[in-house]
Image (cartoon, rainbow, N blue to C red; front, side):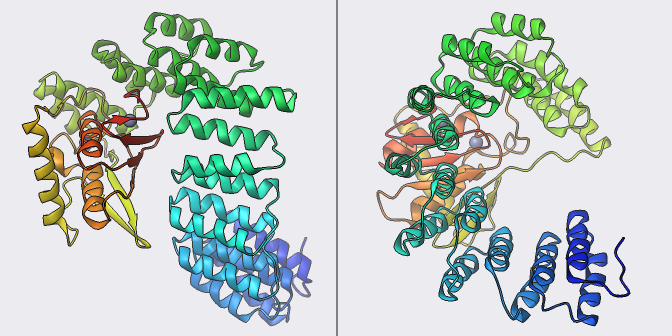
Length: 477
Ligand SMILES: [Zn+2]
Ligand SMILES: [Zn+2]
């Protein structure tokens, strides 16, 4: 029990950490007052825990005040402050702090940098990730194995597989994480063969018992390469498969069009009631246009997760595709009745340190007119070459796109904005929060050829590299 009549700094820091875990800002503030009252504020243990508490409770301004008042700061204080800024999307601020920290005589260590790098990667703020890497190299900060893995992971997640691979090649020493990051990276970027090769090399070089984590990477690699036999072998080696492993195996069979085998596998393993498994099966149905089976799977999903709006959207799109509009209305009504909120689609592109976000049919961007005009011209050009947009919404997971003209789809708006705002030849990098639809995928392939640019589109499951009229996913997504 903490005695708050005469608290000491350890007890106080512990209490503040508990508030952080409970995200209790109110209680945390009380301890802040106690710290002031008993003169414990200047103790670094206390001020660091206050800093963390404010950051985790989303109070960056309070955190900044604590930070500003600290008499002495250690690496933990700096790291927390950088993390807080990056978390709020203030990348430049984070980078500036990293520089100050170095100027203050505190060398960033692998832990401090690797806590912020993944956040940078997740935000897909690739420029900042690159800046950090350049900064580390310039300042000769020891790039130990943990840090190199984090840099690689950052490059993989922000779309630069070649740079990740370059870091990997330059490593003197590699551990399971390094190999796994690379295997997953190749898989996400549609380089399945390289992914499988990377996994095999890891086994040869490390000669260790592979555990669950890399096993999932092996299955992901086989999925990307569509190597069914190898996938079966890897799966059989897993001693205690988890749902994720089953889902990857089902995904592999379904993507390869082996629906009978997938069905038998699901029955034998007794995994019919796993949403993750059913979604994997559904992906295969979408790729191979298996509308009938797809509908069965969606019905199963609706039964399993009756409060998940995504499932009803799939169902509604399926009916729309089959011209059953009364059913579409019925489903839309029940979505409203149940108060469910379908996810809105949006895409974003980062240009000159600014992130531009587009929704479906968005006209709010200052350059909207030009953006639509560009797409209209490209579309005309394509139609002139005999291209017909595919309107199949069968098994697509976005609601509002069906009602919208195709050139209003968010990913196309972001791509178009990229085209008109960057120099000829520059790669366009766009992220979308939901799956790309069939027609935008097709259109993007076409655009890449017409304008002779590479377009990298990240969706929740993979990266599509559109280049010279084709996509790295080989249309298997
Ligand atoms: Zn679309
Ligand atoms: Zn693709």
